[in-house]
Length: 544
Image (cartoon, rainbow, N blue to C red):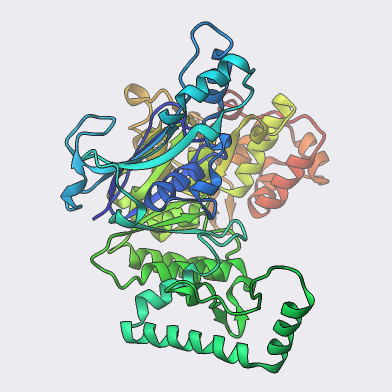
């Protein structure tokens, strides 16, 4: 059992109906800041548990969970002859076919015969007379949230649904803040429920009850309670300090998880994230489908801990549905780009139809910063770090600012241009490839045959020097390649200028060829830092 689809309307940043199709196992949601990634996680946790920001929704019901634009339109309409009805929030989840049939019906936004439920925050009609008097007599400046209520409803039109009856249970792990979700003891509770037998649970409860007896028999506590009763005027009734035992499972709220004798909430947030995830993945109720919601797990985690977490997630994904938000290319690559969901302008793009070997490639070489390409406004792809510096310099000299200031990311991708171009083509991302011709123009044009000539794509530019340069120079007995970036730069400038920039006194091009070949990074840094005006080859200057 799993979530197949999520729909959101009027909740926080999502004004119009937003739809998210979910994978059965792993879902990796990426997007710019404020794109709505956290809102998706909050919406899922809210409809499945009733909790928002670590508190039950009853305590978090306020104007600011509504879409700001919708609220504004409503308030402004109250000053007109055609006031709008109070806005409402609707969150829907569509469940897989193996979910309980009691949730099956057509009470959903699609009017389809589906299995699922909705969570609604709406104006309560029982307050209508009072509300009508209010809007007629007062100037309303904010949403009258006191007239609102919330409820769950199955697609079978059953309004008696509560979180307890929902067959899919969420576990929210947010390492980005210090607030423990759903109270401080949810994790020890899960340990107890999942790893202890019923007899052991009873034993814990009885031990907790004995703790009250020991506490109340302490001489100091007896004396304190006598003082409270005799020296205070709090109440005519007996007042005393004790241990809370009023509920069946009161011990759950008294126990604290320790790690190496340190309370759980005092250990590092990275370690907390790993432990919480392991607990959520090790749930013993295998017949109960669970959703693991993880907010930016890369926060507070070292590289080693991040690897450990990813290992656990990949292993646990067989039996759990995992929905994770991230800005980390490492996580995206390791968990698989086929699980990636790009959130852009409140629309989603998936990567499922990329070639299998591309998925495998980025999974094995997780260091490639794929999300830089995905999240940028435009990308310029180059082969190495020195090339990246040169392109940055060319852009700065032309526009007086670095490309990143215009949302353009210059990315060094080694020889993996075609892998990145598959992604760019899929999401229609503007990309420029600036590459060396190397030894053969024919080979280069064959390599990029899917992106040049009659196969050219409007969002992809392959830029290179079509003129092949040749010479007799050799370095350590090997022919020198005149068709890389450094020789092309020298060709576009003078020896005198480069002697000035590099503080040299060379008299021939080949002396410079050797120097720049053997000192690529140093030369790139000096070119980047120089105040002199540099001439760049047309295959660079014409496309940036």
